[in-house]
Image (cartoon, rainbow, N blue to C red; front, side, top):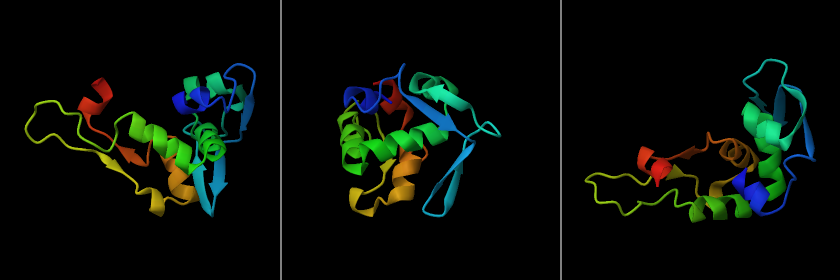
Length: 121
């Protein structure tokens, strides 16, 4: 969502998304946690509702190059530099291997693996 706001892809309060409960991406059905979906909502409500199909739409609007450039800017996929033995880098898809489904799942957070340290820095 931060990337979409920064890139002015959506207006959180004025742009709307209709969530019917799922979205189909290249034959894969990606579901919202709420059966039947949230219906019409602003993108601020997409964030508040943690609506996966709404985030898929944001990922599609951003495109993989922009989304993954911000993942890099946030420092995901590399060590933080904190002095801890065994600190991990997390797991991020290689951009060359990102198709529509990987873009979609990354947009709602299931295509990225980060460490607790990443979340606190």
